[in-house]
Length: 173
Image (cartoon, rainbow, N blue to C red; front, side, top):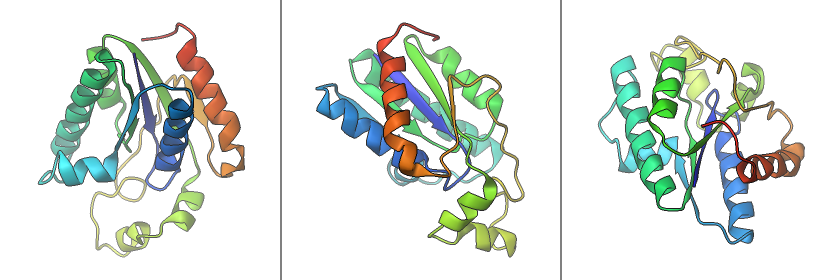
């Protein structure tokens, strides 16, 4: 089937987009699952930190689960910061089916305003070290299938339509 990989800064809108895409696919009668970064860290990768090595393990585990879902006819919608290009490339190359990379390129200022957990504030105060977008880098995808600025989520139905049309068309793996 397919894997939709949503990547972007924390609080960029990845999870909101993932849930809307899942709802649309459900309405179309298509099986899908959302693998959300926060939930994955609670249930699948508990104990991993945010070092480069731990982030790599986290991303590769999610990629593996996504591949299993996809090959069994389920659209895997992965919503993770996944900050490093090499990690995303590695996940993509391990997939045998359709892989749609979506870059949720919301500006940092907007992400900081959306942060209901106060993570950016804590990172700026030095309470969280290695926080993506503050003191750890985020490498934007070189050539995402769909780049999307989620500053204004009013356009969400339009972008979800675009995702669905991409999933229907044969395309990049």
